Image (cartoon, rainbow, N blue to C red):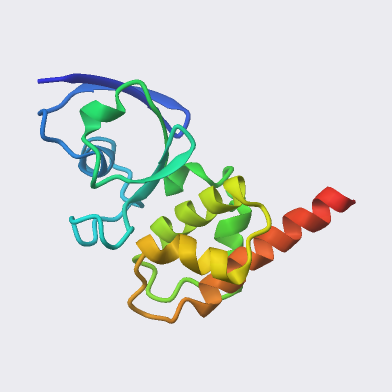
Length: 159
């Protein structure tokens, strides 16, 4: 069995895992971080998105052994104690949560988008989210939440 070592949400973890263990299963079952969801198991829905070395990745497409040595951030790693990450707060305020199943993957994808493109257009936001499926909405409130965080960051930078 491969021995994997990685940093997850700032904590070093090291375990032996069967070689076929998906990163999403390692995160949920071995580490007990159940905020990352398993939706389709075929990389279609994006419910399992986490950050691997700062980039959003569908954790059902990566073996845990392939993430050996990586820095992983899950939805649990975004908030600072009781303070939600601005994207988490924006999703709540804009009612972008709906049933909540896709929310962790949506939030992780949205954070990655704004890190790469701090001022996306609505079309760029909708294009970025094509790998994330929400079965509840037409994405309108999710897009509003992302736009809100982008505007807030722009306002803070100008001050």
